[in-house]
Image (cartoon, rainbow, N blue to C red; front, side, top):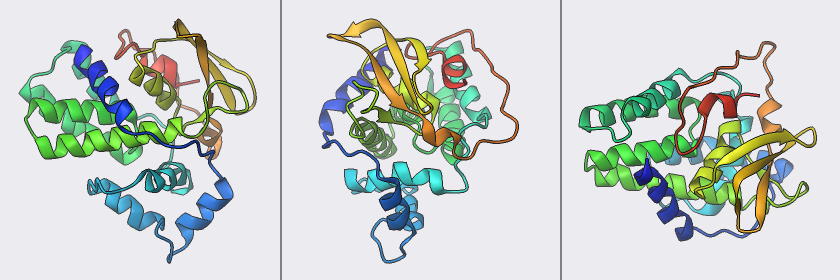
Length: 243
């Protein structure tokens, strides 16, 4: 999986954004205003159509505006995601046929979790195997800007300045993008968790993430916990995603 890790490493320095803590009131107002450039249906359509001219400002409203959409169901399992992970479990370097499967299931994942860094990473990789430069560039652009958006939401270094994520998996994806391995997750407040690292990131032993949005639409029955016997980019997909 070194190629995937290198992909993350190459993309990160390309996108830098000033810190911008999500303002929920402003976000909800802007994405609901039909006269706003951030009116969500239009903005999301541009994203799904692969518009690489979308700015980091657009991505701020895209990512943090998604929890207000009916499609946002972060606690429901995504079967297609398991299919993609199963392919990598069988083959660390998928061939053309397997890459076509990754893209097929990856598109299904996007219907439930359109901003999954992990899925965008896999899609970029698969399009690369198929020598599809256009779609590879589109997903690489998405990946870089989603990661930058999350990392601009705080410093990640303090409980009161966490990185805000929409899925539990997004937090470990951010760490994987930095080539860091999570060691343990610990809930420190009602909405913030601390993820310690197997090896320090310089002097940093772990990072803080705000997962409060995950419970905005908490279902009456939570899905059962599932643990996979393999890892992708040092991530145990289900055991690290589910609480």
